[in-house]
Image (tube, rainbow, N blue to C red; front, side, top):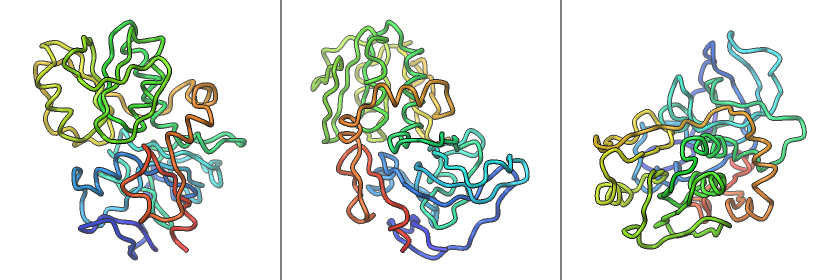
Amino acid sequence: MQAIVFDLGITKKDVVEKPINKDFVMVSPLKVLLSGIENAIFSGILWVEPNKILGSSGIVKIRDIGLEVDKGLENRDAVVLPYSKKYGGIGTEVDGIMAEKPVLPYDSIVILPEDYELKYILYGYASIALQLRKVIKGLNLLILGGGLTSYISALATVGYANKTYIYNDEGYKLRLYGVEEVKNSDNIKFDAVFITTMRSWARIIIQNLAREGDLLILPRFLNSWPALIPSRLNVKFIEPSKFDGVFEFIDEQISEKIFKELVAESDTLEASLPTPKPGVILDAKKIFT
């Protein structure tokens, strides 16, 4: 089958079809969501094993299931989370969705309602944002990064955090009501910092500004990232996961205007990396024709 893999670069090649393990599902990709994870692989910041099938998230149709998976889920559409609690990062530590017949851990998918909208493709990032709300309630929150996780989390924490600041050194800027974008983090008084970027500048800011015992929050996209965490900080990870209220949050808070500012749509992989916006949605059918 054809697949998009990492092979000293990002390329399309023929690979052997994978067997369906007992807790996996075989799917057909419908839409692929490229984000900061694929940007990091493309730019060399994040290394993955050669010939690993890429694609951390998207919308798929379930075609076949393993022995431990409910057979009634066949032919249902689902959104793929970028992380499996059991197996690790999708498209990084485990083969991803950019193949003709990808095989994915069942715990990395969420079944979509029958009348779902395309913006539900953001489910994994929205689930992180809603969990973050509970952690930072009443605190001054500094978010470092300019990707999907950053902006959706900033949107979600307005009215929950005492103040939400965002420091983005990655080019694309998105203004959100109630979120203060800062250019100089030296003058910010924060109680918690949420690092969403894999770039090294975020670590430098933390090393210079964070006080002993400060709350450092990290999204869990891989088991192997980050490699180093300052020991003086109180560290909490938040995993993308199935979480109550995510569809409702997307319906109510991510308007069509915000959705179009967060993601672009593309027909070709070559024109999509690095992503011109925090995310790019690829039509999977056009990748493999």
